[in-house]
Image (cartoon, rainbow, N blue to C red; front, side, top):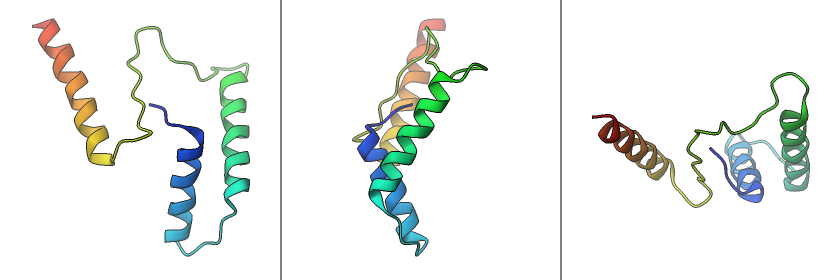
Length: 82
């Protein structure tokens, strides 16, 4: 699962505002980029997409749309295996 970094930052910002926190969007953007870099370059189990993985880009999807898309992938896989 992936999303545009700016959309991810905006979503995190919105979550923090909803908790009545006072986030700095630039700090969030920087933090996400730093964490992504650490996760993808660490020596032990770097975060990588498996060769047989299905990439779900949720940049423009609502939570319900993400769920439905994931279900459609599962249904397609089930149909192929039947």
